[in-house]
Image (cartoon, rainbow, N blue to C red; front, side, top):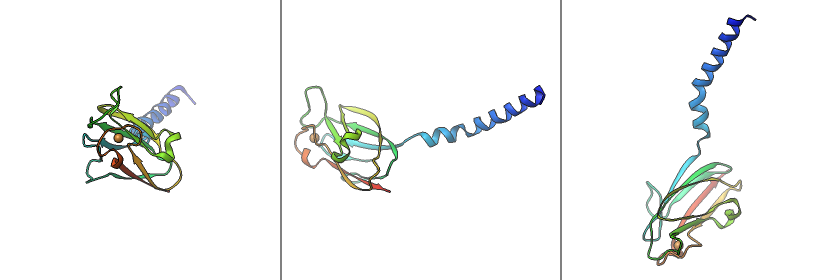
Length: 139
Ligand SMILES: [Cu+2]
């Protein structure tokens, strides 16, 4: 194989790589799950009324985008709410937020089922015990 053939093959593969790059990047970008912890101590999700119900795929990587507002009570360090799934706690599904928006990259565990998420650890005042969301994990 001569030099110009090799250069052509390199150009061909490089072009294919450049064309496929957006697909590769897009496929690896986790889905964003937006949840807001409100000043009234509820969880809300865009496009939904009431307590959020979020469908997830077992094993899926997601970006949990948590936006928090300060309720009637908060912790000394400024933490306003947390979002915890008790069954998944050891896999990172217990995150805390201060006022503002924070992203968490999390892996949905493999077991299908319905799981409750709640503000279980930060005493945010009135409504705290009902500050819930539901995750439905599909196989
Ligand atoms: Cu709370």
